[in-house]
Image 1 (tube, rainbow, N blue to C red):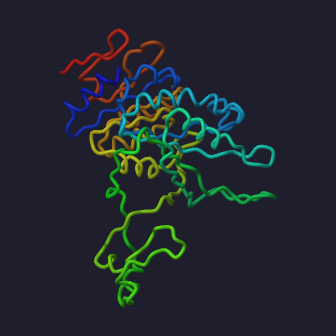
Image 2: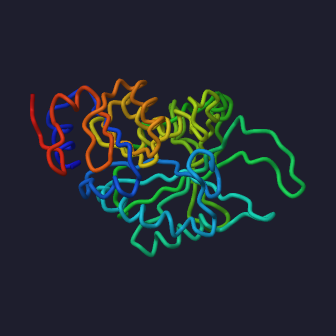
Image 3: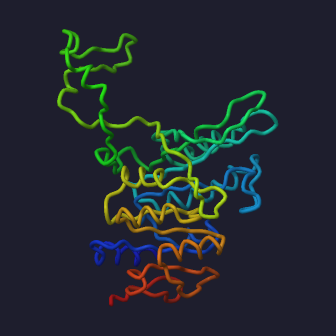
Length: 315
């Protein structure tokens, strides 16, 4: 199915992104997508035993068993040069952190995923609270998986301003600042302060400081616009395809559309699909194999559902 969608996206769309939303179970919908057709997967699945009123909840002891088949399909649809960013956090069970996230990482590595990096999302406006054995949660994991060591990464797209500290620090350099100062612990790292002269921008760290979403658009676990947008800019270029298999209120699709990327979302709850479709001006297409499909105008004018897949119909 997605091979025809992707063909149209890459050949016909020059400035307008194409957006497709599938109202279906995640695993079922992933199975109809073509292999190696997605450049970036960025998502935040239901956390274990949370959002019960929304998605029913998955017990922490069963989380790995539930999520592994999904990761197998995600690995299949991801391009060799693509990335998979998983926003997730362990919950507390009987007074201690459960290990399902760590167990998931280990099992995914056994299945060929590379755990390339871990980014930390620091929630600048986290909810207040007090517990007898821990402080309030102010961060979540953003696990970065790839299929190979060489993948697409556009680091210059997420550079940050150097800051005013450079004016005083670089005003008067010592003799050491003019040479590479090696780490004293033998780590292999070093720095040459002189190299910072004249620079306005620097590469960021792997700690991302973003506020949580306050206007959550009726969803129980919306992540902020800035989070998927940062990864979209880092791991894709314009015209690439972004997939969110747990689309929710459509944050990833919205940011993909805004940054001129094509996108495919999957969401099991029709109410969220309807809200996303209204916001992104998606039109409901035919129902196929129990799936409602919502498409942007750019998509609808160029292909329709035919039998079990999309057939290109250039307008």
